[in-house]
Image 1: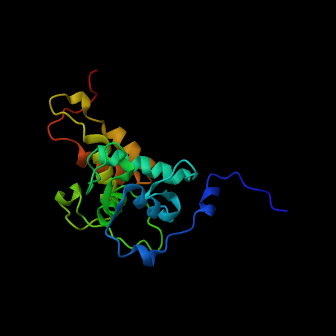
Image 2: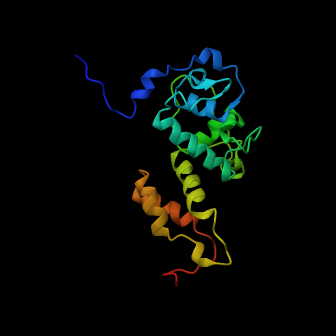
Image 3: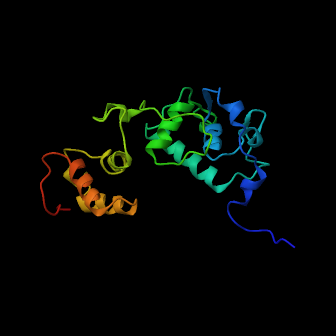
Length: 198
């Protein structure tokens, strides 16, 4: 006799995978639909009346987490929308290639069969490497976004230390040598060395 599992991923078994053949011709989707596709969940099984149904459907933890991450990306200006629904952000519309590009910069995995390829059409397109990237450059971009986006040149206390940046990078599986190099590259010009005064 099989005993039901209490795994957090159990709910995945109740929602089938998307039919990629039906979705691959779609260019735009609602934010929650894009997140469902990235989680390899059929969006049609999560909706009622064309909207996300959170009343009668228990959405998987990964879906909820990624939806929250996407909303944060919108708030930070990192994920651009085609149509904003400020009162119900998950119902906003997004270009699926733009969404794939955002997911790629966050290091999120794509399910097999996911039809939309990332393009360098987000803010990172202005970075020196243009359309070229590799894992180290992705980590550099993530560290820049995490540690330097709120830096105020008039207030040196807003700058992270190289140790803070390199420690985080090492936690992201970057080698200590590369982490130290990335932290040094990202450091703002003209910052004094040594300990910061509080």
